[in-house]
Amino acid sequence: MKKIKVGIVGGTGYTGVELLRLLARHPNVQIQVITSRGEAGLPVADMFPSLRGGVKLAFSDPATVDLTQCDIVFFATPHGVAMRQTPALVAAGVKVIDLAADFRLQDAAEFEKWYKLPHDCMDILEKAVYGLPELYARDIAQAEVIGNPGCYPTTVLLGLAPLLEHGWIDYSAPIIADAKSGVSGAGRKAEVGTLFSESSDNLKAYGVAGHRHHPEILAQLKKLSGHNAVQLIFVPHLIPMIRGMLTTLHVKLNAEGKRQSLQSVYEQRYANDYFVDVMPAGALPETRSVRGANYLRLALYPQAADYVTIIVVQDNLVKGASGQAVQNMNLMFNLPVDTGLQILPLLP
Image (cartoon, rainbow, N blue to C red; front, side):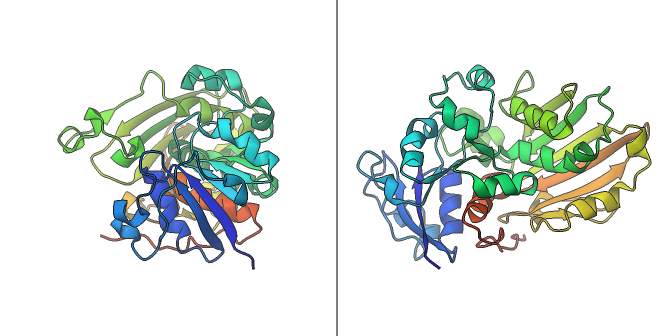
């Protein structure tokens, strides 16, 4: 099979280097170009010695490369970059996956409210597909542009999808999402809040008054449920570890939902989804069980007062970002969804 020619815009951040790690061993991929304005000319392996022998390219100045020679371009860049370059790429027949937020929210007003940027390509935004493979595989396979989901939304939406699809949630009570992420979720940049002496031996909530992933989660909850009355309380936390995400969901069931064997329903719903592991009743998912791999594991705990608790774990950089992006690419090029992603988690 002809190799997929891949370009990566923004290869120096955590999601960029994670893409490189995964794509370097993908059997159907040829990495054509990796851009970085500040590191142009520097061999990738000089910045990331973990990639020595796997990635032999140097970073290129984005102003000097022709990305239209690629089959697909990944944007591992800050919000606002992809939407400025995507129209020309799409016009040239290049597929695009954006790991930032430019194509996650179909409501441009919501995007502008939360990201403080005007949206520059509304026509493409209207056609972009939300890239959660376990929910929208058919649409992803036909898409030109993918908005790769945020890490927190991935855990919340896959944790709730079977209940939403069957209509078993009592929307008179809010869905509660108590989520915790490793420090790498903040990105590879110098900030006081992510210094070792600030984040180690510490646990803190943030974005309690409003987090950028809240409107993304809420929009998808409404879409999946068909209810505009969905209420969501979402509180993210920063935990003193590098990788990993654990989200605990508390959901009130309606009368129909209370009569179901949720364990078997979840097992059947995800039976054909390679990367979603519904754990046995009574199991407690741990972040280390998914470290470095593209798996998402979840467990169900029925509670008193008609509630169910759902615990979901993933690696925020893999299933929460770059691994999911590779899943999307596989679907877009008619490859098995697990191609290049059959990596077992690291332990310890």
